[in-house]
Image 1: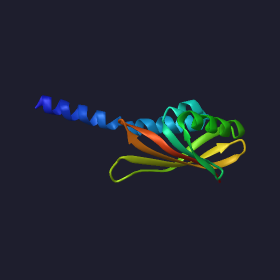
Image 2: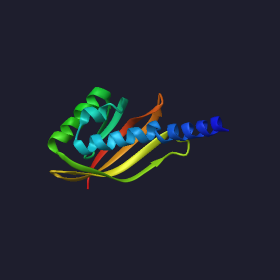
Image 3: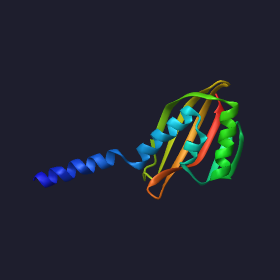
Length: 129
């Protein structure tokens, strides 16, 4: 009985620290701080980036440069999540939030898919609020 209780406690603690939950917290923190390198750690090999209507698919390294450029022009002050969700199959996750910057507020959309046991950003959008 003690072994069963131990296994149940261990399983629930492992489930609480899923890659989806861990990655999303790190991603929102990187957005808040304007840290493109930290955000880039969660980019897939190719990422669709849209900045103020200008969108394209970039390699991971190019995507980091595009986001750095955006952050240099619009210094982030804070990011707040407005909504987040998970697909029925739990193989993708999204987050929508507001990024307060020195140049105004932007609506940010982050779409992630599970690959190799962790969520990787497939799409990132910055739209003027």
